[in-house]
Image (cartoon, rainbow, N blue to C red; front, side, top):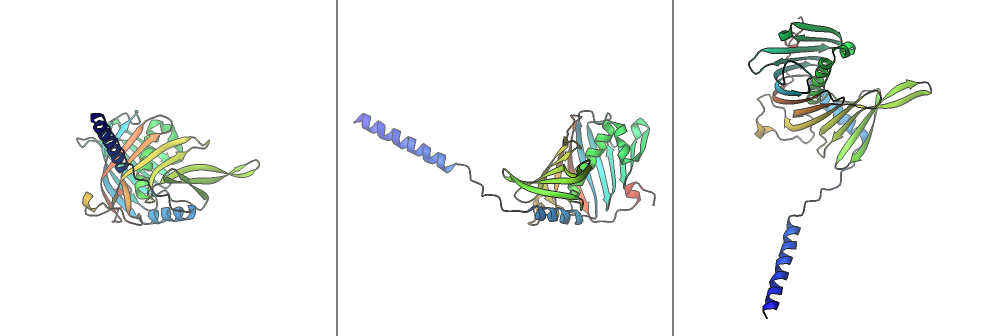
Length: 277
């Protein structure tokens, strides 16, 4: 009789254990909805057009020696369409580390602590080495917040499902001896909310120039960044990532940018952009 009772409790225990496993089984995500490349391209265009100007505060953590002057930077950003951008970086004590200004194909990089200033065409910035990479990665980080990853008229796109995300491959035309061909220049990953959560920038040979991760999406609000008001809008047009992580594809370093305050579509003056009024 004792053996029967013990066997009964063992069976009950095992059955209860299996039932518990069934209760905590992971929830199955529904399949991705059908989305076309044209729909994603249109969404990118809407998000780009929604921002006319931007100003804000950020903190950047830099690793890998991209800038020899600091590893932690407090900064400000000012932007005005179509392509005027100014980034300024400071130490935690308020000393100015750098000023980076770009407009059209012109740039200025000023390093007050070193008493140096570089100016010229952006296409010639490669001569600056790691300073050029730092400036380029910083501009890409801000561009992702602004939504400046829309598709141009000269580019073509293709969408594929990549696990639980959509991947939009972006191509540009190149001329060759046998005629024109297409070359991949970017890859964009969208989550189920159709927000861009990752972007790969590709070089001329298809190598990865940089991997950019977007996180901590919040609704832009001119009154500040109260987390209670950071709900994602359905269309996602005015939601932006407040955390951007960049990894240099050539192993030169990483940058993690956290935005603390962003104000959009306000008046940005020429002096705010480091320009002569």
